[in-house]
Image (cartoon, rainbow, N blue to C red; front, side, top):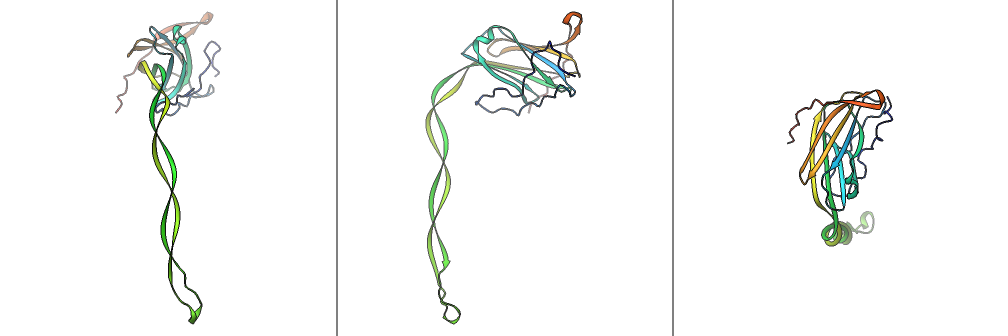
Length: 218
């Protein structure tokens, strides 16, 4: 089954990863020809901060969407979409308003350092009855890797305001769902879910999703 034309374009997994922090592995979305459900995520912001906005969608601890946009993009509501497997899933939405500053930071680097050792070898002469046996020593140069530290100027990610929230439900195959993520202020955000049933004229009827309890993380 192909995605209907009224859906936004499907987003590739782990789009635009930032070189900041650690990231979960990418979410492996099903193809349009495999069992799947459509999940649309509408994001709206009642406040902004900083100069850039990073938005992320994490499905069962796997990165499904990660993108950085100018903060001005948060002025209007935007919708993205992703294909998901028709199994119970926890969908976490994160948003982070930030800017970058040049700061002195410590970083490690590796150098190859020479060092010497003394080794023994046989240095006798002659053969048979005329053989003389001696052991000599010689100095041998080796190299090893050493970790060192230095202080350099680097652009540093500085968070100005951020929030994250999650929802858990069981998408059904070939069904369409819309999640509405509403950011109000630092650490104040929410996400809701409705199932959208297509009706005549390209419209939808909507009903609340049957939510599941969020699983506790150890």
